[in-house]
Image (cartoon, rainbow, N blue to C red; front, side):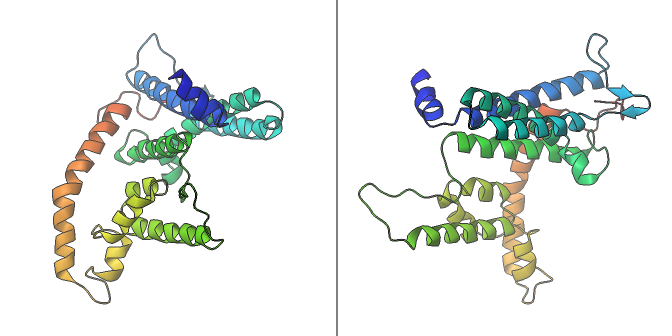
Length: 260
């Protein structure tokens, strides 16, 4: 493990990114434990932060830390890699606090303990997945040139544009995770772009849904069947993971609306 860390993180210059990644995960886990203990009204734990009648959401602290970490990182990036890693950690802490209340920003109201609040967990999962792939050295929309092969000057732009088109098609077909991971593993983009679109996706509405210029009921029926047969069990599993991480949104809370 030590040799892997030295080669893939230190020697590759990814220490700041790794520190951001660790700080993001650790802060999110701590934040979720913190708000669940506050929601349970545990007497020995921290309470909410209030200034008079104003409740200060932790997204506010997150924005401040992101600004501080980002600007400080710009200042010290060319001076000291150690301090650069420290500022990246501060940025990771701020990003976790902001993403944990992503649903609040999205809906412009406090939906933390509502069903809409699951969007925050999705946002954090996406950030962790993408950052983790970057830490491993994968490049978005990248490609590997075999040893001994000298590609022409037009090949790299062509591959980049091709991967980007496949990513857009995959996302339009409603395959969000396939599209995001496929940015780093282009083979998944081919699968996502070729396979049938999800029934509620823009692609389905445009090309074979009931409101499409040329509706194709048979294709829509297959899409609905696949959604019911394969997608719904995955969604139920995802919701179970979300509730394990963030708590049940429908549980009664005597301090609802007063949480950090």
